[in-house]
Image (cartoon, rainbow, N blue to C red; front, side):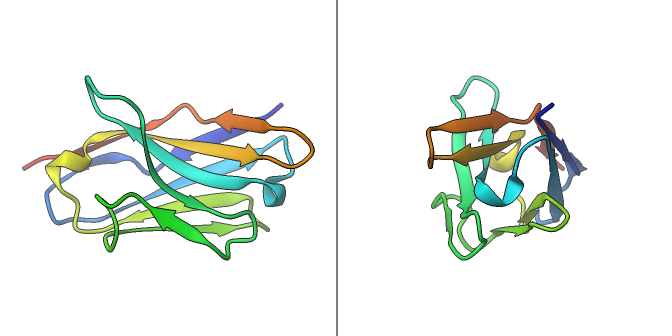
Amino acid sequence: QVQLVESGGGLVQPGESLRLSCAASGFTFSNYAMSWYRQAPGKSRELVGRIASAGSNTNYADSVKGRFTISRDNVKRVVYLQMNSLKPEDTAVYYCHALRTTAGISAYWGQGTQVTVSS
């Protein structure tokens, strides 16, 4: 069955770094654009960044530009989110999302991983 399993979350201090991973199985990973979303308590889920299926194009929310980097390994079927210079406002549950818009729409969500930035 389809699975997106996030890992790498945790508690860090402001200014530190974390790398999140999302391991995919059960679908043709290389056909899907991959995204990271986040949801803070009391707020709606927001897009953090997205990477195209071949990894050639990325885009980011203004709030994370220059600090976060998305990458993917289509052989290992993993997408990464490198988060540097973390701020308390980055505290949220981070979700992995897969989307294919050719031959119909197909989308999947991971279960999320908690990131807490606090001194």
